[in-house]
Each structure stands twice: as C-alpha cells, then as structure tokens.
Length: 250
Image (cartoon, rainbow, N blue to C red):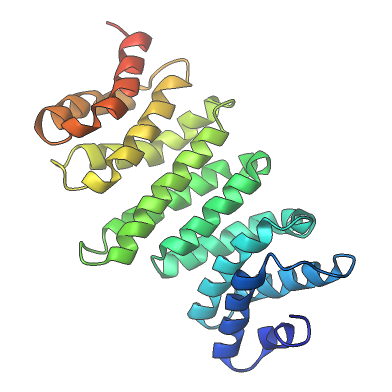
C-alpha cells in the first residue's frame, strides 16, 4: 500500500487517484506493521481527495473514508477536522445524488455520535435540503431516490443521538415538519419514504414535553394515510398517534 498506492493519491492522472481511493475500500482492514504513522498518512491523503478537482475522485474518497473511520486509532486524526469533513460531504451531496456518499456520512454520524451534537442542527438542515433536491430529480433517477431515503435515515440517526437533548428538536422542526407533511400528505406519492417519516415523527412527538402546534398538522394526515393508502404501516403509525393522544388528549 505504502509503496504502490500512496503515490497514486497525488498522481496527475485522475483515474489513478480514483483507483487509489478504491483500493482503500478493499484493503482498509489490512494490518499495519508500524506505529500508526502509515494510517495517519493514509487518512490525510484520503481527506485531501475529498476536495479533488474531479468529482468521481471525491465520491470514491468519501466512500473510502467510511472504512478508515472504523480502523482503530483513526479518530485521533479525524476528530479535530470533523467540521471540515462534514462540510465536504455536504458539498459533494449537493453535486450528486449518490446513496453511498450519504451512507458514508451516516457511518460518520454513528461513529462520532457524542461529538455530533454541535453540528446536529446543521446536519439536519443540510440533509433536509439534500432530500428535497433528490426527490425533485424525478422518478426515473434511482440513485437520487436511494440517496433521498439515505438522507432520511441519517436524519433519524441524528434525532436518536439527540434524544437526551429534546429541546434541540424544536430548532430542527422547521426543517423536518415540511418533509413529514410532504411525505404523508401526497396520497402515497412518496410511499418509499413513509417509514422514515414515521420514525422521525415518533422522535418529535415522544421526547419533547409538548407537541408544537405545527406538528399537529401531521395528525389528520396520519389518519388519511392509513384510511386510503398506507394501512400496511399501522404498526409504525401507532407510536406517534399514541404520543399525540397522550401529550394532549383534548
């Protein structure tokens, strides 16, 4: 890796830079024989490729990083630059709808969960915007549809990590409530996203002490969805319905 792959990260040929990132994904679990210097150098090389001039290289680098995150000792190098990493992922997501890029972002959120709190609102904001862009790409764009679903899954991961800070949910609601209403209120047009929307609605109705007035707009949509096109999702609808009734029975 050190002698054959590392030099290609800085190759003038874009294909070789892309291939070097691909190699990381295939051999990330290979044991290192040194004191960790090679791993730190490799992480720095991959981080540099996140801002590569070629978009395919950026995509492969973002996919490669998810594998390096799980390597012991990688957090020492990655945590100090976590905000910059998140910004690079957001930028790449704005360039292209790729579910593997969003999946890599979710690994970052899962791995560094306790360090995500300062970035939680920005994450939800960016992921919500990305979701809207992806669903607007059209029904024929399967990659965008998968990336949209992955965005919602990432949002739910953030919500789960913030459940001990429910006051933050209120700040996120302006970005999340329109998504939930869009998914539940279009007669099944967004059926593939209903599960994620119901999970988010469960978080927003369970952990805060009170349900916001804007969130109540989802209540009649739940009934209408079950009555007309989403009866298969009854088990997932039950928790938010129960939360609505328990928090404000009147």
